[in-house]
Image (cartoon, rainbow, N blue to C red; front, side, top):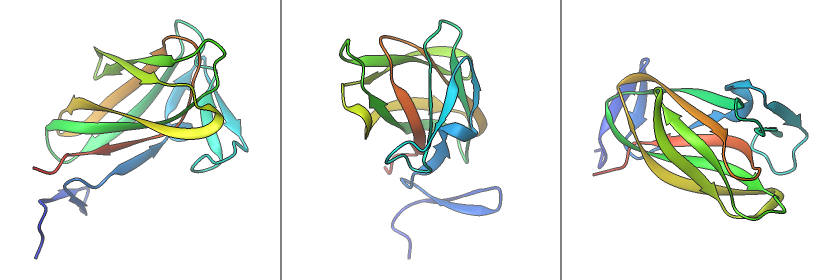
Amino acid sequence: MYSRRLDWLDARPVVEGAKIRYEAEDADFARANARYAAGGASNGVVVGGIDFADSRVTFTVRVPRAGDYRLYTRFANGSDGGAASHTLTVNGVASGAVDYPVTGWDNWQVSERQVTLRAGDNLISYGKGAHYAEIDAIDVAHPAH
């Protein structure tokens, strides 16, 4: 017997609260670059160089139903200037920022926040914010009720 809601996405089961991972190197990115052989990164590759006003890393995220989801951003911030951030856009709507404390480069941590997604495909975009940080991956989970 399940103690959590079970949804279906593309003929695959998705358990409520389970994280679905999206690797940054598989996202669409512009004026940013993939860095290979990144120590401790989930696939050894990260996206960095998100340094310009028109830099973007855009993930296509697919979820089984509309609602509030937890967005976990796996990042490293070795900025000399201190805490960093990326702007966040969800389905074309500005959604604030994702903040990153200083961790050092290749010291991967997770920043967590809530986003509202629609059923099916969603576009989650990160842009240049304060200072500099790299993205390893994101995880998306529908919180258990």
